[in-house]
Image (cartoon, rainbow, N blue to C red; front, side, top):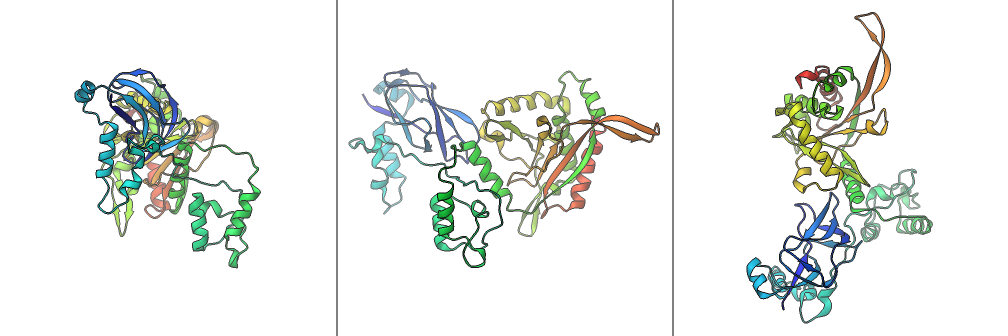
Length: 411
């Protein structure tokens, strides 16, 4: 009977590869249509690879812990002709031909597609690749060279290193420039240090933060008295947390002046067309940011269920790719870790991120009673792209968020 490949699917618009977490099948197993057979991890979520037809597993080509690009053959099914006709799936031979057709004229199509040739066992070894974002942790030290020679750049490319990865290496070249010899000496120095493999999630976060830090970022802060907010949440059946209040107030404040969340493109500020704001959710070895859409148009009570569902999906690593795309800003509640201050970093495609700290009891002067009274106070920290927003504009935005949070019944 014909063989049908199980392929690494396109798991999202921006996802080019995934790592095999767990194989749910073995040779000889019978599988049905839409049977989840392989669990994979991308830099955003954990997902399942499902079958497109019924059949018997005849060979597993993928290995747990390895990373494969989209389109790789992960396993083979033996499928009868009637099932192929019913589902319209491609056989190994047809898949090989389709891959060949995708090659432009004059390309090395034959060499590049040998692993799909049925009469050659080469196709039985799917292409294993390393995650396309790598990095080398280095201890803090003085800044290295500003100039990177072509030879050094080539060696860094071989190792998957960025300029930030070598900035702490003391250079012996002219003007403190880091040379290839300096890099090799450092690699030898740390060769016996304990190490662990960075997950796709960790590498995704690392790449995102590297790109974000290429901009001039600044932070401002403001205290937030939370007593009215905490009292109001008790009156609602859904009992929304402080993060949802902050999300809603942040959305209203941005909607009043969308330019503060715009992008600087050339000599233009491109304003957001919708107030879609993400919430940072801590997961194992990283952070996911699901997006709540059109927050300026939805009341707080109506958002509670949507918010809870998105956070649950994020914690279970089951977010759809579209649920994390298109945000214009993020809110992060680092107070859940007991932190009383922080300066969060916005995503590369966002201008703003607003952080909320843990609430603590403090004495605050009351003009009404002319005495200090105990209140629960947290800190709000707004980090912004200084090319788009100045300190004054960021301060006014933050003041408006605080003002809105003092009238939680209007949210």
